[in-house]
Image 1 (cartoon, rainbow, N blue to C red):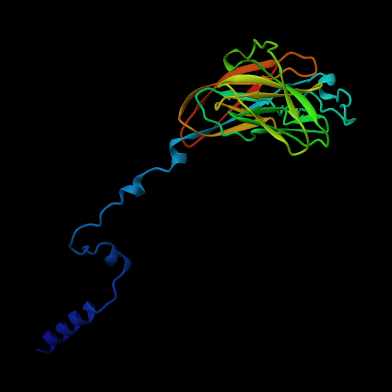
Image 2 (cartoon, one colour; image 1 turned 180 degrees about the horizontal axis):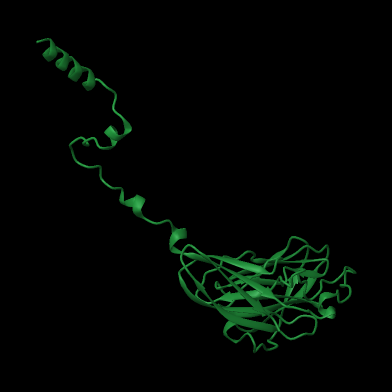
Length: 252
């Protein structure tokens, strides 16, 4: 009888013993319907479906005259060099076309200040020309060609644009994929009306984000400056989802 009571007491004590981690792991889950899976949680973010492309444009051993100021403007201010390479030969202010891409415009406005135009190249489907001069100014605007024929520019038929005083702005109509030249005396600026075009930054590179995976044709175009002909470089890059592709184009 005593042995039987001791056995019952031992069983009762063991049933109150705390569960170990193993006990919890192997415990039978409560019965009932499993929680529904949130379908939205299974959708991949846009960054996982698209990739980015960085285009770097270089021109090694740029001739010294192209890197030097060509003199002074009509306002007696220093003229900007035709090309301003970085220490690693990256070239800013170069047009980059990525066929099939949509590149947001970083600027849709060109300003005339101190007898110079800035920025000197714009990729945009619309354009505003503004004066920051303290006196009336006259500039000209001409269509020089089409994006499909970057190597075949013509002189075009310039038309005058009057900018009476500082703060005055004029909206200029653009044809899709047209190439235009804006001129204020010896100073020029270029406009390319295409959503597939962008302009390299001071580092000489352009980052194009959220591209669908695939192979892209890439063209770099430095417009005519300082009496030198335009320069073109072409290549291709393959973009993969969730990754950054890189391509370097070298102007010759």
